[in-house]
Image 1 (cartoon, one colour):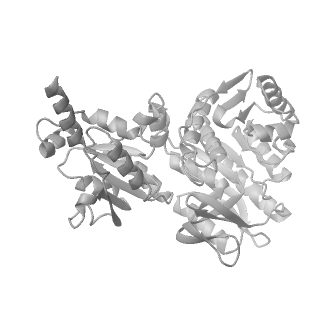
Image 2: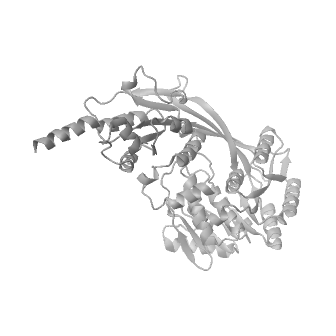
Image 3: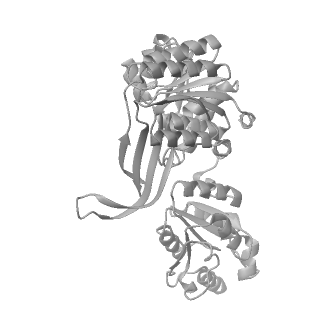
Length: 478
């Protein structure tokens, strides 16, 4: 897999571009005007959507991307073109059409749940003059393209004339064409190299209800035969994907945590295209695409997967979920950056947590309630000895970290060796810093970095020291 990391294939993406607009907030009350939640908007973001998400995924992988599409000659169209240019994408084949409205989908996200979506768009097929200009732009770009990806969202760019024109020109130029299809009639994709419908889409396109391996095989080979494809692929969600060329075979996948399936199909298409453009074989491309999709479905909203994330995912597949939550400072910093970009509220606390007990668990559960992701910094064995004396800790640092990582309330654990967690806090910049109630009136290390400090009272009578004393008394009686 690493051999693909520093390559830069030239990929042409053709399809329906759009802007995904997000309003992030929280809701704590119902409107007095109507039985709907009142969302306190805290952040607003815009990302490329539709075929634009395929573009974003390719850029994240390191591809050189040229995009061909038709968008409106409006404010959203100019904004979309600017977003593409910021990514370094070649927009020479981007057609502005006064007759069209640039697609913009706005989603309201409250407490990481989508509340509502509202769209502004044109769905009609592009007009004849726009089709002509688009096909001419594609023809000029094929000579410098290693592969072509068609991302069809049913918004009118990939009508039959454009789609068949692209496939015909690509065949003449010896360039592979991969298609993420839309609708029930796939005839316009005839002659492509590969189509990648999901199971539901493949069932609708073939008229075969896919309920077992036999019906899956029948549907896959019907697609390949009737569309005159080199190969077909049907994605199977958490079951992986099935490939159909000379035979049928399935590539399994495992996704640890699934927050949102938005954009997973875009990630599969872009990763397949990237690897195949670099000369990789379909089975290897499918395996890597599975890993990329697993990374993406662990995020909220349309998202991308970098090679570092894909490689990390693959290398940790043999680890348990608990082991996966124990991270180095460097790896944790990357995860926190991603989580913040997704609008999540980061909570941090730290301690020795030598002999885990009820007081610890209650404390951590309360800490988690202050945000979305709880990170626990655990003192190393050396730092515990400096704080507690040579007889401590009772349990070594990895054992303590593992037990904490196994708790439902804890999302990530990292071990730090400094006397205080200040440098760790400075690296993570959490939203909320949590300490015990005994810090009332005292200065909390890192309070100048975190946005908020919360104190949590300990459970009376529960402490590691008291447990050790109790054990010592029992041993003296024996």
